[in-house]
Structure formats: C-alpha cells, structure tokens
Length: 550
Picture 1: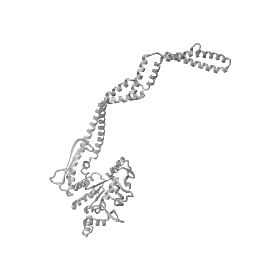
Picture 2: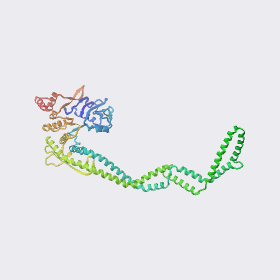
Picture 3: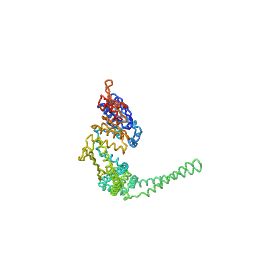
Picture 4: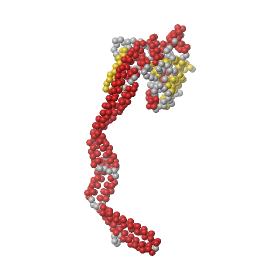
C-alpha cells in the first residue's frame, strides 16, 4: 500500500507531503484544481517517461518520492530478479534534473525505467474511464477466470513444463538445421577424415622423419666422413690412438720414477680410453649406415604427405593435424548418428507434450467450472450498477497451440441490451459501461487474490443517484482487503471514504500553486455540501451532507 507521497517542484506543486492510510481514501476538488497533476506525479513513480516541462522552477530539480508497505505483496523474487534489496517499506524516488535528465531509485539503488515499470504495476493500479484497454485484453480476462478457478498452482506446473518443452523444441530445431548442413558437408568431411586417418599421424614424428631423411639421403657422405674419422684415430703412422698409446707408455715410465708424473699419466690414459670408446662408436655408426633406397622413398613420401596435409589444412604441426582429425571424426560421427539423436529428442518432446496436455486439460476444466460463477457474479453486480440487461457469453476452446497459460482460446462476449447480439467487450460496451464492468471485475478479484493499491480516477463519470451510491459501496467493500483511492465528483461516493483529501489551488505572491489537504469531519461536511449544491452552501445541503456521512 502507498503510505506517503512527497512531490517537490512538479507542475503547479511547489512542495507537497502527505501520508495515507489503509482502507478507502477519497480525493475531491474542483475541476482544474490539480487532481491530474497529482496523478501525473504518481505516474512518474510508476515509470512514466519524464518531461522537462513538468518542472515548476526550471532551475531546480523535481523530486517525487513514494513510500510503499510491500509486506504482503510477495515481491521478494521480483526484487531479486531486478537486483534490488528487498525492504518491507520500499522507497521509490524519481528525480528530473534541469538538464532534462531523469533518474530513478528504489531503496536508494539506481534503476532503469523498465525495472521501475515492472515494479510499479505490482504496487498501484491507476484506472480511469478512459483506460479500459486492460479489460479487453485476453491475458487480463484469463487472469480473472484463473483467480476464480484457483489455477495458480496448476499454471505454475504448466509453465515449468512449457519452459522445458520450448527448450527441447529449440534443441530439435538446431539438430535439424545441423543435419541439413551436415549432410551437405558429410562426404567432403568423410574424405578429409579418411586422408588423415590413413596418414597414421603421430604428434612428434615430423622431426624424426626429417632427420632420418637427411641421413638416408646423405649416407655416402656420412660413410666417407666416418671412415676418415676412424683413420684419424687408428691410422698406423699418424693415428691419434697410436700416438696417445705411445704417449701413455712414455708417461707411465716417468711416473714409476716420480709420483708427480702420475696425475698427468692418468689424464692421458683417461683420454685414451675415451677416444678408444669414440672409435668403437664410430665403427658402430659405420655398421649401421646402409644405403636403403626403399626406406628413403618411404620417408620421402611420408614427409611429402605430411607437408601436403599441413598446407591443405593451413597448419604448421602434426599435432594440429591430429586436432583437425578429431574434430572431423566428431562431425562425421554426429552426422552419421544425427537421425538417432533427432529421434531421441522427438521422444522427449512427445513425453513432455503428454504432461503439458494433462495440465492444460486440468486448467481448462477448472476454468470451465469457474466461468458460470464469474458470469453470475458479474451480472449481479452490474444489475445493481444500472445495467439490468447486461449479459456475458464466456466460452473456451482448446486448440493445439501451447500458450503461456494453457491451450485455451477465450471468447469473452458481452451484450448490454435484451435481445442484443453478443460481441467482444471493446465493441459491445461504451466507456461508462466498461468502467462499471471493470469495477465489478476488480471487486470480484479482491475476494480471490491480493491486488495492489487501486486508484479509480473519476470512474463514476456519467452516473448518479442510487448507481453512484452502489459504486461507492463496492469500492468501500473492496477497501476492506486492499487500499482503494477514488478521485470523484460525486458526493454519494465521497461520503463513503474512511479518509478524505481535497485538492485545491491558491495564489501565493501572484503564483498559482496546487495543494492537497486532509479534511476533518466538519470540513468534509462542508466539502460534500458544496459538491451537492455549489459554492453557496445551504442549510439543506449541509443537512444532506451530514446524512450522507452518517
């Protein structure tokens, strides 16, 4: 509920601060006093776009702040979704700067207009005779029927299944699209994969093959060099081994004469041993070397193949070719198994459709059972509101489409006259009739769901007498379970409020300003008397006003 409203520097309002109570609140005032300004300021709180022309003083910013008690509104999830801190007493502030920029805050956290609008519709419902689009909207009509049908839990279950169904449908569409493209590419991918598989790729083989190719391709040169090296080591006249052997023997004789030659002897001996081992290794290399034209051809062919594959796939390593092979393998496998995958997905969809159909059937049954009750309630209330011949023809038709609230198509038809044809509301009812129908519907809804604060803006236009009295009774009854405001020109309705505010204009220093003041009992008597008989209040008008209030 709205607990307080503060408006600064907005239109004709310089500064206004007012607190509101639960129950039925009346707002009255002469035409042009500024009731629309009050609603305009409140609309900014609910996310309406700001206009620089709204500033009273163009050099100062406009501030509109409202405090709501949202304890019983179950809005915690909505706050979390919009990344807001939940506070039972929520403060919404809107600022319009002289530059024309606008800012909005919820509990001091900045929000965009979309978030503000999403929250706003859960806090206040402003309704006037000229705003009946909601009434002719299918979703609102379903909301009314579902409230009476107690469909909340079944609809929640349906929406969970519907979300899964939509996800599966998207996955199936993706699979079919993939299949269409994959089939086109399958033969080529399979050919590329066959090439890479037959290549028998190994991640580290390129370097080894290149080295082996160099050896095989230069075997004669290597043999020549190894032979030359062996000769340098073992040639009888100048061989290094023979010379070192002679040196070793000489130093061995010297070391027997003096120990100081032992170390140098040992070093020469170690060198001789190492070179002898080198000689043996060289002989081994020579034995390994073999002219093998066939192997050279094989290595050369493998290298050519690898280089061609790397060039073809625009990569630099065999490891990258292996990655491409694995990717192609997966694509080919997916393509070859896509029919089974699609069939599996279709089976999942068929299963979820059975669950959806079952839940949609329950929703349809409960709606069908609730429609006669809604029809009777509406026609009874409208009879008391001066529409004795009002009749509704409400029916449902199930089809194969899964809507967000079931599979029903709703026909919400109306006739205001005896023997008249039934037509959709927007064609069959006038503005005044739509207002009374909306009042009837909202009064019924209060019995089944928690509605936000509702503000009726001159919804009683065009009615009088006993009908206005009954409208006031309905709004007063609604206010027992919710906060109700009525901006009215009718004394019969004004007298039924628990709290009464008056909007008025006054001139201060040659500047017109709009104000709002709460009336006490005596002031209410005078206000209602003026609504009955004009500015010159007669004794009979005062007496009538007191009678209405009592």
